[in-house]
Length: 309
Image (cartoon, rainbow, N blue to C red; front, side, top):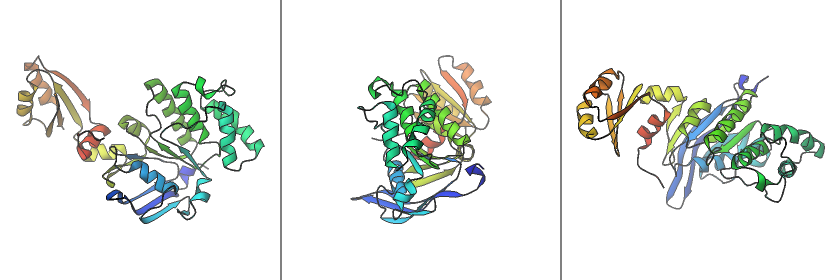
């Protein structure tokens, strides 16, 4: 039976807090992750996403709050819980002195797996990573996308129930990113529970059953991508730029539910976009794009457009 059919909570976080000096990087958050779903943590840099993952894995201790991972209290029984968890770190940490197969083999030993069990899984994992013919090759000979897929496959060596992923596709080109997405969809179909952080809104919208948006250590929104878009954003967006766009945007405020100016572009949010589009016909110097609202619009509305370092 697929884990998603059990309705079981695999991760529960309540009142979680973590402070570093004067900065409270996780400021009293609550959420639950159900078996078989892909749950996302979104937020600007410094929002507390990676710290939340580390707390949930028992890699750092909370200042307050409770965590239960796979029915075990964390950090008290974090080691036992992690035996049933896979982790994909933000940056690949494959051993460059080993072959692809050796990286998998050594990682399996960390979990106390029998040699026969590891050897039986290696061909499956190499196939999953799309490098079935590269098992005896050195890591340096692999492309960035191959290394990332191998890091994902390595996280599956112990056949985990839950896979934690910290920005799994950062730094990859579009082709490699799409291939990773297909692998993650396969894991969902196999009943694995996925918990990921990402800066790619399209990634979250494609993969996540539910997600939270964090800012300054707090959860400011929770729901499915569709629910959040419907709740926070008008359904249509018209982006406009070009000579004199500011004057057009001022007049457009009467036609749109909301107009934002960001740099050299006006973002117009409307339930009915037709009046906006019609008004642009008398401004041929302006360039515009009409599109449906998406998760990135929600993210920018809730967290702002200012750059975070």
